[in-house]
Structure formats: C-alpha cells, structure tokens
Image (cartoon, rainbow, N blue to C red; front, side, top):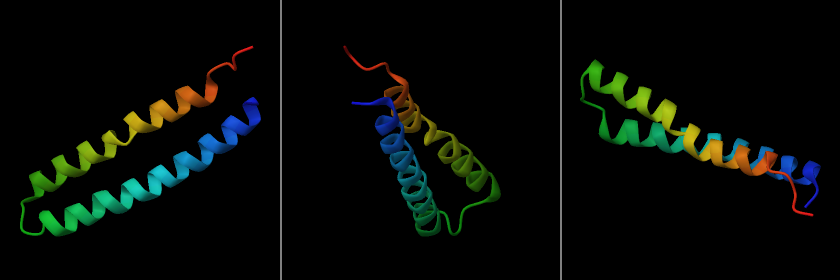
Length: 69
C-alpha cells in the first residue's frame, strides 16, 4: 500500500478515534460521575485524557511503517 494512502487512512481513523472516544468518555462521565467529588472527576478526566494515546499510537505506528517490497 502506498505511503500516502496509508497516511490518509490513518488520519481519517485518528480523527474518528478522537471524536468517538471524546463522546464516549463524556457520556460515561455524565452517566456515572454526576454526584462524585471533584477529585474523582479530576482522576477520571486525567486517565481518560491519557488513555486515547494507546490506540492512537498503534495507528501512527502502522502509518509510518515502511511498505514491504
């Protein structure tokens, strides 16, 4: 697969990942953390703010991998 096509696909996947992940994390926070304290909110948003990096890292690694000859 050409590198430019992989980067296009990877970019679209990353954008979709961020949108879906943000929606999901916010939905869970509204549904489950409504009556929690400020520290629980801080911990939740800190962890979910960092957690999206793991799947994004895999997509970026796939994007920059050299094509097989």
